[in-house]
Image (cartoon, rainbow, N blue to C red; front, side, top):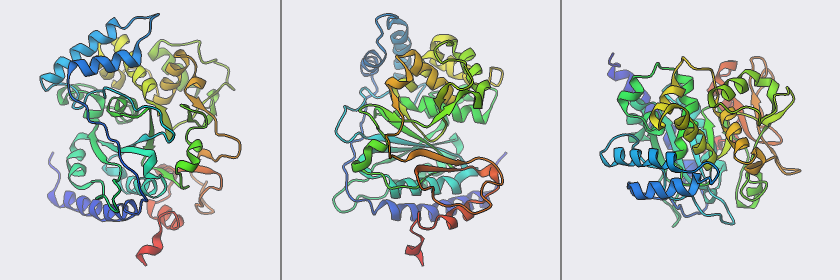
Length: 389
């Protein structure tokens, strides 16, 4: 069914209006050179990447490399994923860079623009390699023509912004995505892990449209993001809060016993999250191992017929089996802000929305009945609203 032309034009107009606002904030960034990595599409570079990332003497790498050789041949024929796994993850530096990934869709566009504007304003460019926005395939055609990184100013280069369709992020052909019984929420969860093949940094920050960065973060407080060298911060939770998610993910991945089943077992939370790129790729590789190849693995995971797994429980399980979750993540340092504070239920915002006193991100979910206009008005200082008076 074809959408009315007038409806699409209104959305494009709204996009351009919001982008003017976001670009104004983005141009005020101080200075930083972007180090975006360009990767050639060859079987050799992909194979070197997999060998470096996933080599495990106890298990061997033959099957993974064989699958990747097949994927490389598909890429050379113009099939499969649009962008290959980067040949190299960034080397450690005194100021680690990450990739920011925002997963959204047209229905959530006003909130997504607020999330992006808050990140532009508060996340210093020297900490960001690249912004990636992932959205449904049909909507990517519109966003790709309107949502662009601002021009460089003052001799500095702003981190680039890239649009990916969910099809590209999943690494599937259009025909393959159409053959899967559609479940939008599963797609959104899977994308947060499969997008790791497009990330060229050791870590990437996952944002949803309802996540707002409310505190300035620059190199001087990089320990808020990385409490220990090479370890990204995480939000602590307990297993009983989402016990079914944990059981289903253990069943799906056939990985049980590593994370204790006791209700009060400490586990990681939800979005926003700073994921280790290698661990996220290992989850996708596990799907491939279980279901006979990457494409089949992703398609099985997306199907409604399987258990209701989740992305973060799956990620935590793989990290546990790769040496322990604490090998890759750390709690906030004493005195550092918490990763996030959430408004999850109706009635929690009757007194209004204020910037949390001790958190980096606020999560204001759309189902609690608070309009995004009210959120922006309540947090006008966050968005420097006085600039437009």
